[in-house]
Image (cartoon, rainbow, N blue to C red):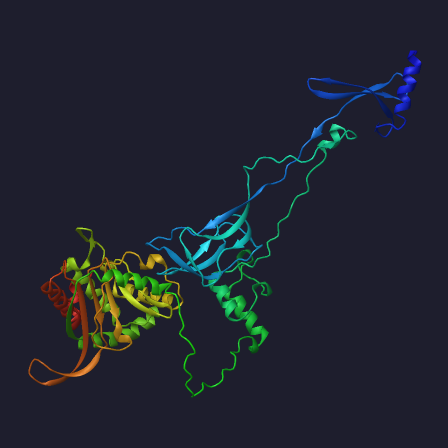
Length: 475
């Protein structure tokens, strides 16, 4: 077989050219390999013209995603479990770092949990009202795995495409649209109370954040029917007994009371009661309350005077401002006086820090702040931590004497009764009108003697019955 016939047979095998461009057509003559790279030799149908093309394969990779369990971390203050109050996200929502995930109620305060990841919510592990332990998974979040190995996709032959064509291929940009309305937990709660969807409200805050004013404006424009309370039928006078007992788990703030009171059973309590004539303090407050209201807008009560006088008395009797730590007694440098606060969510014990450095007006402002935070369930763990002495004002509800229970590791607590106008004998034996308040003290008898408590109470009584004496000790 001669050379011309061989070439003719080769052209017969490749009637349809495998490799073409706009101007020329080629057919493959041979295949060879150089340094592991497969190459082909092509011949133009025009005589004496050949070109070499290199066949290469290329790979592409896509972003790998990993589902990360977002766990409840340790909030501090010995908190072991929390109750889920509200979810701010749902399955499928896109979240970023520091976005609000949920609000939980510990046994001491309400805390908002924020995200540590950027990603997509895949699963909620708890319903509203469920109790989650520290370390439990709250949500699963799908995040991008930057360190994931590149996945190999099926090879695609680009034998018809030159190297220049491959370099011109670019990946289209991906735009992520976040459609979740931005709002603080308080604003979300307000919208929930009025059955308003945040997505229906025009946001005027920074970065498209929905503000409280936006919701109020939307409610006003929607008419009074949106906020009108449902008609409640008058209660029936017929008493119907319960069909069965109701069982509720002990959780939230009631759970911490349960635990604290159980620990207090190991403390040998002793009581001490006394009466205080607050006539001069009543007159002093009457003279100052209008001025304080006019200058600061705050309501001046008797508590700021009592708290400041307590701090001055603790300075003279520091053992009552101590705490038991094993076999040691720790004398606290700061007078962090806790005020037992009755809230709709239970009994809380926030404290006013460093009372020894505060004025009467400073204490008044802090009391008002803690009162508002307690009503709105916004007392933070920092407001509760670090207490060294406690007072319980039962007088604003009623009652004269009480038997207060010590909160470990503190060693003393006082309960303030209501101020009563009662007849008393003065120094000359005349019957006069007196403003009498009874204070009941409880002390840890392991470290405090009855005589020490009596001296402390007498010192406080001296300051409150003659409040002018406090001026000599104020800084």
